[in-house]
Amino acid sequence: MLGCLEFKELPTFIDKLTVLEWLYLSGWSELNELCISIDKLIALQSLDLSGCSELKELPTSIDKLTSLEKLDLSGCSKLKELPTTINKLTTLQSLNLLGCSELKEIPTSIDKLTSLQELNLSGWSELKELLTSIDKLTDLEKLDL
Image 1 (tube, helix red, strand yellow):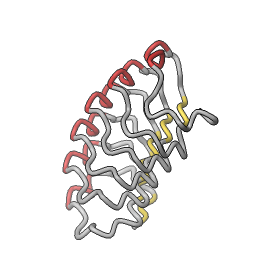
Image 2 (cartoon, one colour):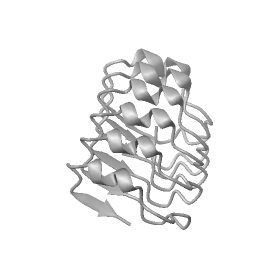
Image 3 (tube, helix red, strand yellow):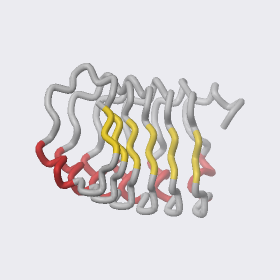
Image 4 (cartoon, one colour):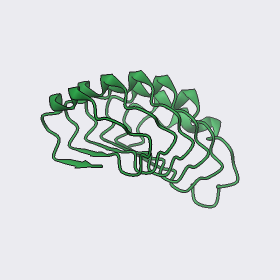
C-alpha cells in the first residue's frame, strides 16, 4: 500500500482477495479503521498494521482469519482494546503490541491462543499486572515486557 498513505480506509475490492496470505499496511498513519470485510481474507497468514497510529479498533470479525499466524499492531497508539474474539485466532503465533499505549488490558481470552510463541507488550505504560492465565500459553517462547 506504499504510496496510498493518504487513503483513510482500505479499498472496497479487498474482500475479493480471498487467497491473499500477507497484508502489509505498516506506517499507514491515516488508516483509522479496518473494513469489516477483512474477514473474507481467509488465507491471510500475516497482518502488519505497525505504525497505523490512527487505528482505534479492530473489527470483531477478525476471528474469521483462521489462518492468521502473525499480527503486528506495534505503534497503534490509539488502539483502545482488542476484540474478545481474538481468542478464536488459534493459529496465531506472534502478537506484537509494542507501544500500544492506549491499551489498558489484555483480554482474558488470550489464554486460548495456545499456538502463541511470541508476545510483545513492551511500551505499555498502563500494564499493571499480567494475566494469571498466561501460564496456559504453553508454546510461548518469547515474552517482551
